[in-house]
Length: 294
Image 1 (cartoon, rainbow, N blue to C red):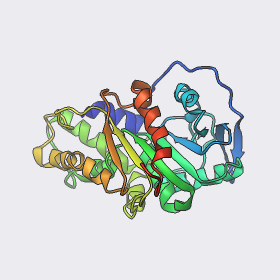
Image 2 (spheres, rainbow, N blue to C red):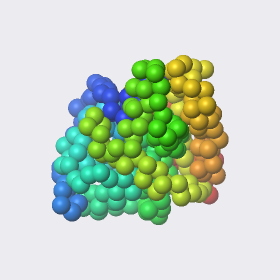
Image 3 (cartoon, rainbow, N blue to C red):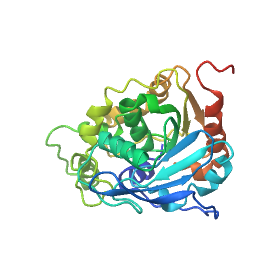
Image 4 (cartoon, rainbow, N blue to C red):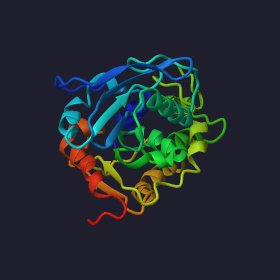
């Protein structure tokens, strides 16, 4: 697992780019959700609705998904959006939690007249937002594809695995420690989204999964490298290692028909690095509804 790459993507929303085709949305713009507005963009048809959720610090309006949208348009009516403070959306009150994100999304879909139910797909931190949305609005969700999600508890483990008042003479270790402790500060200056990760963890701890709904978890190609650098003490490193060792088992518990599929790519943004796998997996949701003959 690529520790520094993953941390950068998760905490700082590292920039990614892709060549975007020219396709036109059927509607796009800012919609008021109560004191501030979020940007919504849809490519509508009479097909089932797919909502594309984004990773931490990522804006749906950045164009990265457009090539995949073009390939999915025959099967889905597709909408994406920018969370508060990202892309074309206005900034709302901070800090906020994953439940706030779910409630804001619901208000946006209502304001934009995007009627449920919905399929969902999204990369990385999107799995947290989709889980929170399903927890609050289960009747609105038909199924989901998660694209290289972190294990649940990732941020919580970063912030809580260290002894109280930890100190070391190793300056690299202390920098790493202070970096991980930044998850306790949702207003940390360098983060693109002011999320209260600890409170969000508590909110999602009660998440019971998707029941019998289809859930496909796509994971990047795995390697044998440890998550932590060598200077992290073994007892502290073991806590994150266990989280990742148990990730697949825990993912499979989230639905009676959950699947974990591994890409041949080791890149985090599989919707760019392995679009065939992502597109085909999203299309497969339509064949995996409860009661449908496989």
